[in-house]
Amino acid sequence: MKVLRTLAFLLVATSLVLAACAPAATEVPVEATEAPATEEAATEAPAATEEPAAGLTCAEPIKVGLITDASGALAIYGAHILRSFMLGMEYATGAPGSAGEKFDFTQTQENTFKIDNCEIQVFVRDDGSNAENTATVARELIDVEGVNILVGTVSSGATATLQGIALESGIPLIVAPAAANDITGVNFNEYTFRTSRNNYQDAMNECIALTQQYKTFVQIAPDYAFGQGSAAAFRDACTLEGAEFVADDIFAPLDTTDFTPYMDQIANSGAEAYIVTWAGSGFVSLVQAAKDQGVTESMALGATFIDNVLMPTFFANAVGTTAGILYHYSAPQNDINAWLVENTKARYGVNPDLFDADGMNAAIFAVEAIKATNGDVSGEALKTAMEGMEFEGPKGTIYIRPEDHVAIQDMYILKLVNVTDPEAAFYEYVDTSRPEPPCLLPEALKDRCGGLPYGNLSGQ
Image (tube, rainbow, N blue to C red; front, top):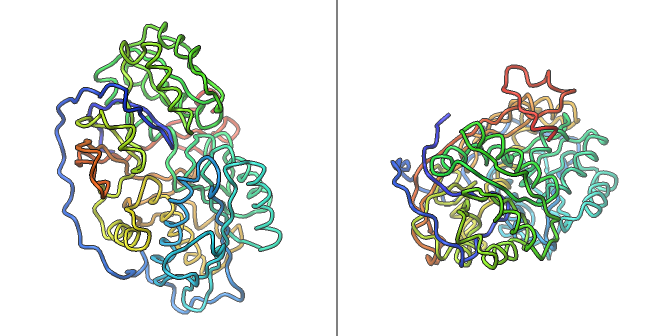
């Protein structure tokens, strides 16, 4: 595993934002690694990772149910998944689906692709990041549409609901883009796989860099699975790097609008820096409270880089800083990412964003599993094929770890050079990491971890 020695300030979340009023992090000299030479993008869908199985047929269409947020608080990220999953299906099967080259959720909720003589039907449902909605649409997809594979969803809490339904129905679930450790940790089941990273991979990517400048920390996170898992992962990973957490982790309800009492706790902690994990619009209020309480003047707050839309608003004062990011379209240099960039721009008028790689990887993963079973979509056949699978996607090689179904994948360290480029070309490449987190299965399943490092994270 490549070890990062890049100094980066830290804020991790699936939707984290750094207010423009926050002070810019101090740039620390880094030894930059040159990005590999860019490979020319193909103008049409190239062949899939492997040649389709000769004469692949199925007695009836194979059905995939995609659940994401098209209308709720995390719909900005659901849009990434909607377009990139359909593009991933096109790339993996070699041709656009029946809905055409540009998928519009407002016009259709179905799309059909083909591998040889086998149809793959994709049914799309909006859950609004609400667990009750997730359960309703998942059962409709299973009981009415008869789907063979589920994919989703954005919210980690809603994904936990989806996991239980998939297990009950014996249907494999591919998680994208939810990041909570619990998904392949305490909530693990043999039918849950992921193409998204987990909180611990974020933590490993950042803690080495963070602890080179600061030694004492306090952190605040939302009081649900994503925030709890992230806080536990950072406490564990940063402590291993010599950090000291000088106060208990602070958890606030996800719908908090007044962060004044929490900022008082942070200000009185005596820490050199505070780590924030937050998902949702409340982060703006959090940063404003930090400014009002003088926290931003006395303590360091940094951030991993976020989606292209919010970067200009919340990182205007951070040009020159170096930090980590899950994915930016400019970072990976390979043919598949080049194809994703070209086709996202041509069809949707934007470059791929933070979670587009997760969606495309989920589609490629589903197609590769179908090919591996020669069209046998029984739950037993699919999950057996999916465990330990390795495939190529826009972030390079994805390896589905058989012990816990974590997706081992590349992550990136970039230097912010501007926030004004109209193509969202905000960064200079610095480095690539490939974090391999400990196995986080619950004690009852610890034997599954085999020889992997085991890190229960106090029950997370």
